[in-house]
Image (cartoon, rainbow, N blue to C red; front, side, top):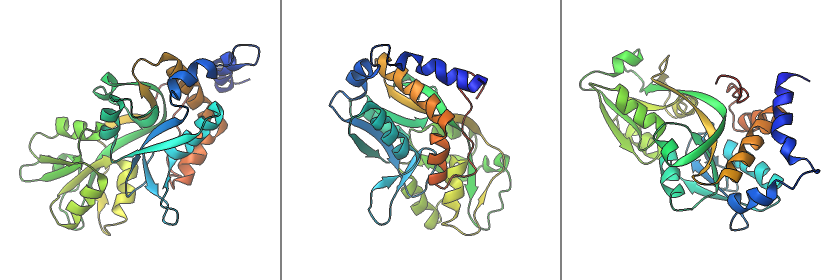
Length: 269
């Protein structure tokens, strides 16, 4: 048995039939209403965090939808997707008990409000510049007179604010609003994760995603503070989902075939 198989076996050992059903404790914290409420970000472009809408059914689809559905099947409870425009909105809503589990980018500020489990995807944030822009590098973005746009109260937004000393950063509630600003010609650069920007660029022929990054982090499972049984359960769930290929299938289904699954939690991310 290789190291990865040993890791997953160890994480799931507590879930064996010989022991008390792990769902007994986890259900009280993961689905206190009897339904697993999964908080998801919904936007116009897919990423390891953002879901999109199916054009036929108008239902959300994406990585978090697939993982939430699999988690609900494991818990044997119905699933409900609670939709938000950004990870910042999800973080704030978590303080009110509006959701039970989510999958979103990690940063130090957000970790004050939620408990993070293991990552399923590592990401980098960079800038997209509009067609015809003279900006060639990340360093050239941070100049007087340059207007950068991003999503408020997000890991990437906070990182851009910290990185930019000369350019002006203006934040909005959603990626859809960023697209509107680009169409109106009011942005010199857009700050988002690289995979979000690749999809974003498709709406603006000639736009370029800059090489390198100003922020690197990961997308991970998270639960509200004070739910240790829930955290233990989703930790084992995500590690198992990486091992069995569920995360790979979810990324592929969202059109993110180039995205690499994060390594096991015992390895360096």
